[in-house]
Structures are given as C-alpha cells and as structure tokens.
Image 1: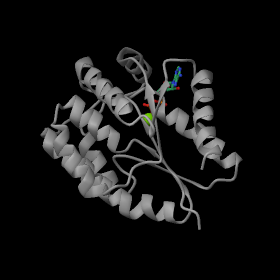
Image 2 (image 1 turned 180 degrees about the vertical axis):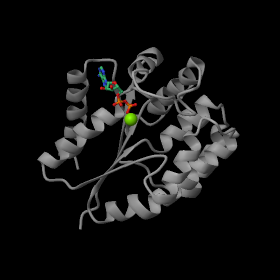
Image 3 (image 1 turned 135 degrees about the horizontal axis):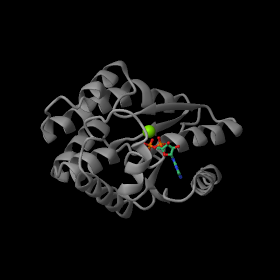
Image 4 (image 1 turned 45 degrees about the vertical axis):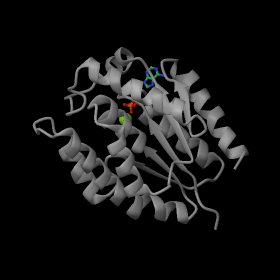
Length: 208
Ligand SMILES: Nc1ncnc2c1ncn2[C@@H]1O[C@H](COP(=O)(O)OP(=O)(O)O)[C@@H](O)[C@H]1O
Ligand SMILES: [Mg+2]
C-alpha cells in the first residue's frame, strides 16, 4: 500500500490553522483521500496530559523542561498515531509539529536551536513532514483574532515581544526549508487564504 502524506500546519495563535485544517480535510475528502486529524502538543492519551500541563498558566516551567516535554509528547505521537496512519496509507494532518518547537521554544523562549536539533534527531531520525503550511500573520492581527475567545493559556499570556520572536523564527525556518515549508499570507481574507491553501495542496496532489 502506498504510504500516506504527512502535512503540518504552523503559525502563531489566530493565524487561522484550525480554520484551514477543516478546509484541507474537506479538499482531501473530495478526492477520496482518507485523513487523520491530530494536533501538537497532544494527539495521544499521554500527549494530551502533557498538553494540559504545558498550557497551564499557573505552572512555572523552564524553557528546557518545556522543550523536553514537547518532544516527549512528540515521540508518543509519532509512534502511536502518525507513523501507523501513514503506513496504512492515510494522510495525517497535524495542527503544529516540530517547527513549532523551533519557533516557540527556540524563538520565543530563546533556547539554543542546536539543542532542539539534537532532540529532533533523537525523536524523529530523518522523518520530516511532506508539506508544511506556515500561516503568516502580523502578531497584532493574530492577537486580535484570538482575543475574542475566553481565558488565555500559558503561551497566550506572553507579551507581544515573545510572539514577534516566534514569528521571526517561523519565517527563518520557512527560508531555511523552502521546498517543505510553504508560506501563506494569512492576513488576507478567509476566501483568499482558502484559495492559496487549495493551490498549494493541488501541487502536492499533482506531483505525488
Ligand atoms: N483569513 C482570516 N480572516 C479573518 N479572520 C480569520 C481568518 N482566518 C481565521 N480567522 C478567524 O480568526 C480566529 C482564529 O482562527 P483559528 O483558525 O482558530 O486560528 P489558529 O488555529 O491558528 O489559532 C477565528 O475566529 C477565525 O474565524
Ligand atoms: Mg487552532
């Protein structure tokens, strides 16, 4: 059986990942591709418990601990969800993956990227997503979009400077891996972003 494809969505809060994830699933289902939708941190029983801790705004967590917990959750996620689904020929769409560690713990928390490289290699070996859609928005736009919601988690509580560093790190990753990471200007209207997502996905569908 043909191996499925692994697609990850990245971007700061309010960039439109969840909105576009639903659109991607719809597009893939139209052409009969079976999909598994998942998220990070999380995606497994242990991963979701780790997520609760990582997002708990009442906890103090060192940047190193945060990175280690993220990759601990990722190891479970890869082994129990992502790799088995891909092997069965399903496409896996994940709301965030390792680029988020480089953006949030590397950029936001200013953790040495060399340490993250080690963890990445330890947990994933050579495995990388087939396609990453990075939804880019100015920090103020993202904040405005999420501020409609309820209480703020441990990351959402951070100041604008934190998110500026997260965005800069994402942009840097996109420049570093242009074949894998496709940048989508998510400050456009919903219809324009959906059209951009559809075009990008069409390329993957056409070229294997
Ligand atoms: N292109 C867009 N233009 C305007 N509003 C948007 C756009 N994309 C998403 N939104 C809205 O912004 C909010 C956050 O979007 P969401 O998809 O939840 O972002 P994320 O999952 O990246 O945090 C939602 O209320 C959503 O409807
Ligand atoms: Mg979301």
